[in-house]
Image (tube, rainbow, N blue to C red; front, side, top):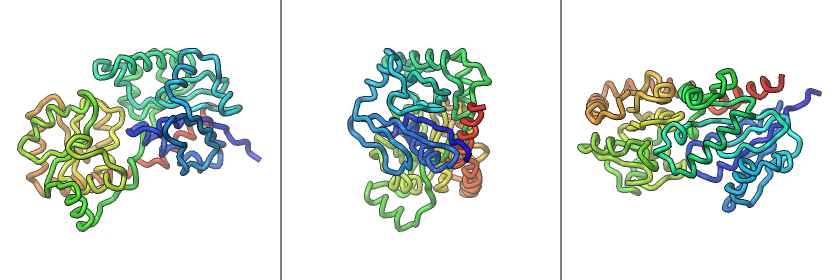
Length: 342
């Protein structure tokens, strides 16, 4: 009988919201169904329990992640094996880099705290610097979620290129176009106009909301987390279905999940011509210089006023999103694990 690879994986980020949680949740679920692996999951949170959808051995610790950050990134006197048992590979999250005798792999979603420290809290910058120092010394392989993130890593670190593998993410969920009745009911619930421009909110300057608001001053602009609350998946799907266009003119993204989510719902996308956005959007999106309000204004006008252009963008979006799936992400991750075990 072929010996399975025993992989420990930190899934603590699932306790939070955001792109890292989406990645961790979807990848863990897919990996738990792969026969070549014996998965054991490390989960720490004061408020939440480990997710039930993961079919694997979950070690649940009701302790604050900050304690493990101290334990693993600073004191470094206890190995991850003390919590998970013997491992062949340990796949770390975005925050901790524990000592381990196993092969070590980590995923980098972006390097925003290191490349643009002015956008992050000094404590977060300090944590990332400490973690990068440990990664540079100890890591066997890094997964970067885009070529852009790989390039950034090579610029801000001493990690050799041969240790960095690019594996793309998949969409947030299995979104699809919804019925007019469902969309209308959702619009009424949140008092949304028939036509509006959708933007994704966030903390700090990175999402470029100042320029987006200027460029969209003549349109109905809906911003998640600001003009509409942060929504659960079922209503987020309806939000994408209700909008006229997604305006995602971010200054920097490690990947850009909203682009794929919009494509799945048949929503045209205007996004930035920088960092990872062109990789994800392909030829399905319209691109802008995120620092030019005039450029954003012109692209908004072009997309919202030309119905034939919108139809072509929607068609291309459905094709582009087929290139990305969590099944594919998991398959390529397993391939990386097997490469480490050679």
